[in-house]
Image (tube, rainbow, N blue to C red; front, side, top):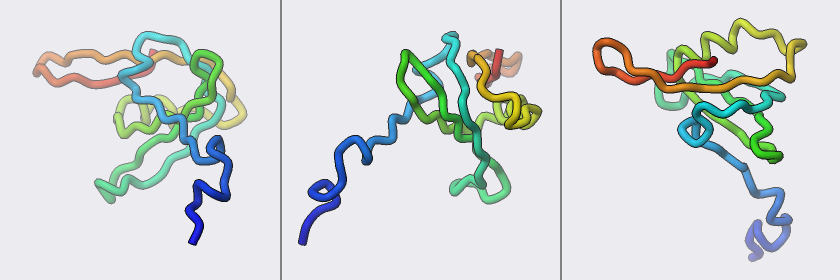
Length: 100
């Protein structure tokens, strides 16, 4: 039998995922957003953003509560827009992500 890589172009198999830590403090163009239920924690959502980063379309998935809270305040009609992410340390020592 053939493999999927034998019948589907390589470009179609690329996800172009990017980690939030790889784009900290850099402005990206957010072009789409969707929410899904986390497969790790049934009662929590995660956010999937389509972004333009360095001229390439990338996918950013995050379960960061403060980031999700910020994007839930956005309506799809407001897309696209620029956003940046930062990691901050709370007084208790915990580090969290937020949108700026």
